[in-house]
View 1 (cartoon, rainbow over the protein chains, first blue to last red):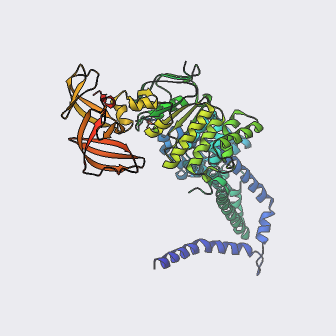
View 2 (view 1 turned 120 degrees about the horizontal axis):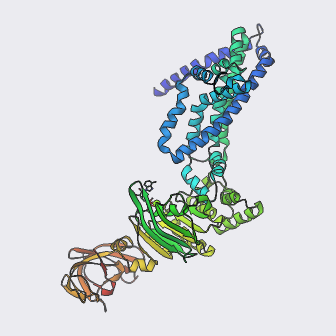
View 3 (view 1 turned 135 degrees about the vertical axis):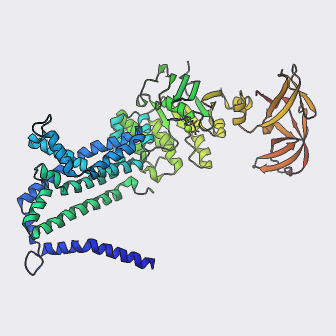
Length: 260
Length: 349
Ligand SMILES: Nc1ncnc2c1ncn2[C@@H]1O[C@H](COP(=O)(O)OP(=O)(O)OP(=O)(O)O)[C@@H](O)[C@H]1O
Ligand SMILES: [Mg+2]
């Protein structure tokens, strides 16, 4: 009986998730009347604006990831090692982007860094890109911090740090040779989540007026019929590919394979 | 001058003084154990030597240089931890090579050294394994090799064996001692296991409440404990209450027997102590202190038989050697036990 109930629940859930996806995929394939075709995908992929915005967002995602890793890993490490009593505070701070809407953050940015402010970042393309990257980093912070902190929990960082110190390693060496390699899987899952967040982000890019993938999605969605469905399927595939990659790295990392 | 000299070392956490006026001199190549109950400050002393804790005051001098101001990575002091602390992402060989890499040792020399170290710990073929593929004992040997690869001036071990099971603990402690002798490395070994400390140390520091109660060779610590704490912490001890009848000659009355200890005592009551192996079943020459007792529990330990005997209000533990032709006494037997005055320790209150 229990079994039957759980299967029912599972099937119902699957229907709610999968049916719209199937419908959307089906729709994206029916641009040509009467037969299934990849025309919508062709149309999307051959659009130069698609390519430009997509590669812009990929670049932004990469920079965001690098910045996020350099910011979060040392911070999480240091807090765990030297200021464990501050962990709840840091955790709360990293959660703030989830409760503060992106639009609030971006208006704050624009107010603070406009052309007549003390740091006129919005005055140049480069500056705006940097600002956008900071924004993305803030949005991805909860995911990145959580992933890294979980990764740090699985190793005894205090003792490993001391072991490395007793063999002559300084802080940079400890970070690069001991801490980072041991949380690499966690960092990578944080990175893929960041990637997924950045690729789909709309508000910040739109308000800062940068040619990112999110605003492009919106534009196409407003003006065309089949292409948005194809784009949505593509975006969905990217997200799932990221998830798959997280699984893959976890699986493939040699030294963690047999643990637990 | 001693190779490693710790002078007036103090450490407080907040208002609690955890290590108090700790002094210790260790010769080059010596193996010294810190022995004491949980929380007595052993680890804290060790961590101050390693540089992980800053002393509140005092000096730590290695080879003539005060190292208190140096960071841990500048001290060249090796450390082995209870939890092994191998780098999980590196293979055994890479773990051992870690310190050499940091030092910038050329690859060829490094590989040769790693090989040498792995041979030394008896794991020449496991260089390619990851730590999780090793047993606890193997991991701890790798940790030892890793600490020794960079040729530290001093080796510190903090309860390196307490996570292992009994059999491996015994064989590994012998191996650690052999390697230590071979390399002639000055070593401090922390343990709360007195048998471990007694069996492998050149000297033992018995600690209690942040203070070094006694420093001496195992034989000395066991047979001539300086304080009541040392006497009771190291080994098993029988306590016998006695009345001093003649303080000048040290004559005491135990039950109905009077014997002279041959050294002056304070008048009043004293507590005498003796080891189980100093108490004999039956009478013997030179053992004038005789007590009538009834056998209680008998523990057959193999070579040694430990017998509990009740004499009046005191219960005595006594050890006899197993003899194939003589069965051990049985519970309830009425026996006489005898003790030599020379084996009686007088415990200061
Ligand atoms: N970082 C710290 N902050 C506050 N108190 C501490 C700290 N480290 C140790 N102590 C206290 O100092 C005392 C000595 O601790 P230490 O770890 O040196 O004991 P130990 O002899 O190694 O004991 P064990 O055999 O249990 O390892 C303990 O009472 C402990 O609670
Ligand atoms: Mg300890």
